[in-house]
Length: 285
Image 1 (tube, rainbow, N blue to C red):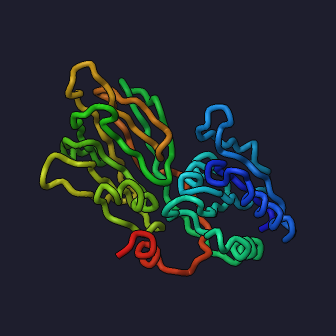
Image 2 (image 1 turned 45 degrees about the vertical axis):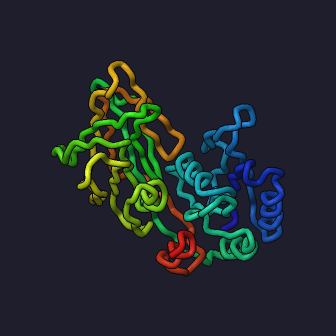
């Protein structure tokens, strides 16, 4: 590969020193590189990277930051036939493949095409109100329905392929991809899945019952989460959150339809180590 774009998080690489180091090394090795900052200079928040900002012949996107930087890049550039690889300047870094101490080695392998590619499934979620879709988005990690600022638990019904699975009383529910299984899903007590597997994981958040557990669904299943009446009349604080930043306010009667997305994200794998070893290294015994 020769055509790269670097998407950098200025909060992780504040003075851009690491970014500049990578740009110079890619050029030294005969590659081309476009640099994009995914932080809005005016608001200080994540901004959407438009596909027009990247070259038409782009082959690989290198993100500098944590897993969130790569998640945003994958969502912004979905539909492009490009590979993604992350340089970890965050915390755990399950998605970010290249350690800061191994950048030159990683770049060498990218340019020499010495890597494997994992195709990661994504989820598509649509929020419906009064029979109309008011929001749609694809995620690489998860879609979370949460009680928001309401201190009371929320009630919702879950349907699978049109059939009622059950009614839940909880703080919310997480619909996760295998890639997202090591994120909020794991913290909420959900199972860990191989990131290249094909399934949808559903994990209730602090359910108010003894028996509720995570459920794993097939890739072809379609889930609907129907929002029941709020505990406090006329107080609507519940939210649907798409990969941490696409936030939609929910009201009683809304439902969220979740299914496998048509697009997939291609993640570069440079390390031949097993997924189980990575879990052990990052999360401990």
